[in-house]
Length: 256
Picture (cartoon, rainbow, N blue to C red):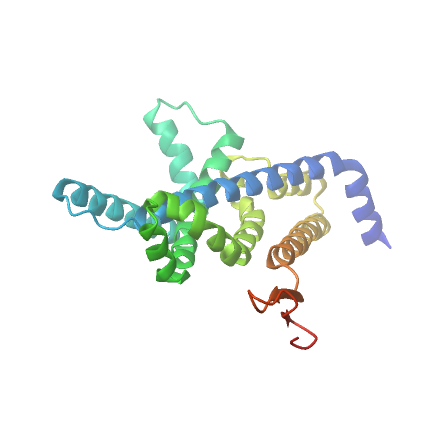
């Protein structure tokens, strides 16, 4: 059939463009998600610092909380495409027409957009940790930062992994909006190919399959990671400090 011939011709002739776009898509999505997660963790730690009794420090904390809240609301409440246009062309406007390099600009846009969502995800994860663990850490002399790093964040990372994975998958798809500033990701390359071949349906069908392969693969890999972090369902713990033979088997078998 002519349809399959057209698909084969597009793949054989333009696969370097498609692979290049796929590579930029994964690069921007991966780095943007990692940086966004770091932003979210930092914001989460800052927003959960206990209020200082010192007036000056308390004012700084309130100002920081307002700034973070405004950042989160703005970047969660506006489309990434609009953010890309404002940031990219806003920089050019402020610098006499000099624009940012495209790939770093794309990474920056995705990172700060993701950071806004990650901030709320991390905040929810921190809130879900039992308050007794904070009190226990403070009672042995840990600072808020030490408590976060050694006690809270390891638990938070495990709890929020599904949400982080979801943000990564979203970013793989949302990098397509960066074509408005000329980032040569997968959608941009597909658009250029269809303007040269006039085979719109065939080109974007191939593109949709490539997006699906990326998101499906990433989802499965992150689910494997999630299972690794969860650990085994069957394990044995000691049931008595005085009797080493007393055991409690969890997840299968009988108590001994």
